[in-house]
Length: 232
Image (cartoon, rainbow, N blue to C red; front, top):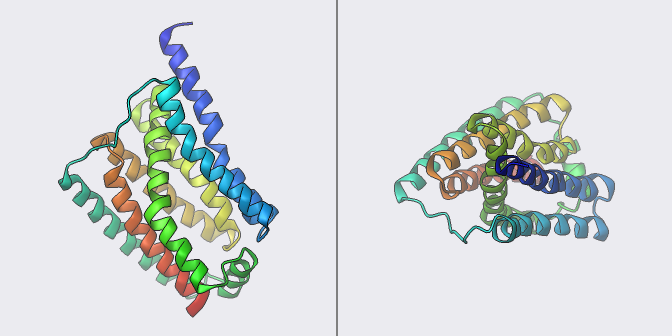
């Protein structure tokens, strides 16, 4: 077996061990066992798995050094500009959809079912998702998953596939709250964001511009979520 074939085989194995796991966590915690201790525990287990697997693989199997993904401040500004731009687009689309397309009572009912019926819980979750989870997603999907796809395919295909992989578990989570047409529209936006952040990683070789953009977008998303859950 040639070295190139070995590298591709390792990349495929890494992707198989990681990509399905977030969807499994969402399915168990939000669809199969919503609001239960077991469901929440399994969700945490899958989060720990996707946090530890990339680092372990990088250090022990790829035998690469630790890196904190340094980047120039000007590139962080690029990420911020993209984040603000995407957030404005999300707000405009929400305003358009909210008039006729979104069933607010269904959203509030499902939020209560999975334990997001408290403003305190929601805000704690929002802080976690904005500050930490968005960073984990850049580390997992833009650094590890994108790079593994790039071993197998050319960079453009790797961007597309990593964006699709990033979107799958979001589709499952959003299916709880929204009808299929709105869910698909949301997923087009999520995949587009994932592709933009993957291109940032491809161009700057750092997760930080994507993280800045991602965190800003999550602020907009959770602000809209707060309005839907507790105000509308």
